[in-house]
Length: 219
Image (cartoon, rainbow, N blue to C red; front, side, top):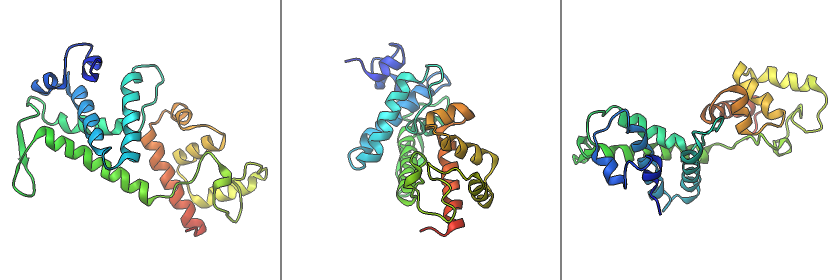
């Protein structure tokens, strides 16, 4: 079976060991970051399967299809971007060089520090998943009852919708995202329509939710 690093390097590397022996450069930092992210997700799946497996599958899919026109990367690729950005500051060094010490005074290599950086991102991602109750943007009937009931699929009184939108004080981008979902778009269609990434949509949806709950005092 062909290794992923071999496939995505077009045969340049037979295994990850060959890749990580090289000095970090602008030519290989992307692949190094992607491979470290995959490794970190494989390890995390052992004790955080639901979150890590979803991101892992998304990242694998991204690596196979991201060069296709109009393909929208998943949230899994945020792990790879985290690793790539971290490694970028060490251009000219190898991943096994020491970059500092941890809280216990132990020396830490660039590679280990990168794993921990990705791990920190995953911890933050999990906390957000646990703490936030999402508005279901694909099923308006799943929304909590509100005074104006403007999200019902059968809603025809647009003055109520306008009243709610005015009360939420949304930014232009938040309003555009909400309107896309109200028009039945899925996330990939919203990304394509507005020219923004999944991460931006995620944060804006959270912002809309917080304002919605604050405005109508819904727990």
